[in-house]
Image 1 (spheres, helix red, strand yellow):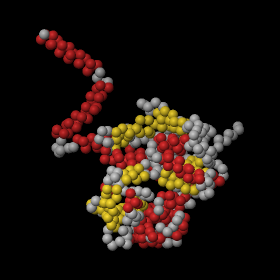
Image 2: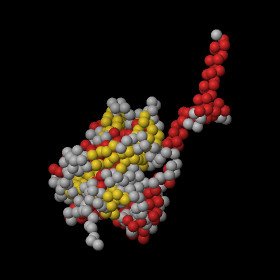
Image 3: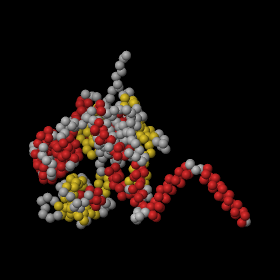
Length: 534
């Protein structure tokens, strides 16, 4: 028996040595020298490092760095941030229902969300929230304030509020509830025939919000439609596909996805859309990304409508959220998406060079892309729409009609006033001091007309000088139209909401005005390129 045991041990060692040597350099050794190496490094640090180190903190710090080496859009979201990150796409969150800004270290209520918990108890725009549950909010950062005001549904929070005209602070007990987050931030009729819908992002409820907006505009006599996706950074892919379905006949390709581990999957229309013949124009710019580009690309490649604006961001990577037990999430790129013509509009990137990727828009600006279509070099592969129009891959959606950013009235004085936040600060202060007058107006047009007679430019110049911005009279006069548009739009937003603000801005918007010209000419549907005879 001892001899047999000895032989078995020797055979085991020989077999183990053989397999270890045979598989060296293959996947087995990669695992041993990869993940085990990381674990060993953590153990070395824990045993030998000069100071006490929290291994969990090290891992939390390392996760984003590892993912950043893959591509610019794979990311790690900690458990603390995961819920907050998803709120804007979920359609609602639990809170008190106010929009606020920080002015002079104090929480100032800009708008009270209709039907929300704060409106029900009497909180008003212009109120200052100085404490929550007897803890002062003075001097707190936005994120910490949001944590104090948000919370589980049906829980209570006591707010201490200072209100203009009241000698003493007021206390409100508010029961937190569902606060809607609307991604269709406004819709209205530009004229008797043209409807306008602005979409902020693509979330759980975006498709249903758009259907409601279309129905309301249809009742008002809509014969043409503008969908504004400028500044829309995207969100979920499925709502974009559902929305395209409303405008295309059956069997049309909307988008397809494909990756190393993900087989090609086509997404096609079912023909049940109610607006398949409605003249359509889509507005995009350098801030339009992801799902916005899926929507715009499907409309363009199927020759369903006209795209107006500037080249879109260029995000063609699909992320899958993978949740850990602690609530943290990895958003891992698993595929690329392709528009119906077959183009991937993902702009080029170098792995591990995230900063360069993020600064791409600045580089575009410096190259003059915002001001001239000739500055945009389409060096990606050529593709063709259903009618044979040429489109390009590898760097965003290029609009059919380019609208340059107008900088003829820009001055360094205007730029500094905007970038330092002085125009926003003045607008809020002005709104607060004139809220009773502003509340009397029933539409954006009348409010804007009144504001244009209030000598806002001079009032702003004095305010800015008190804040340390030296007055420059020549620049002030040169940029006067820009200042007026900026200040009036901010005041309208503070006094009312985004819909009123966009109604005012649409009357001055070159892209909207060009769209209306296209509708008037009956040219919203693209035409096949003309062929020249040799």
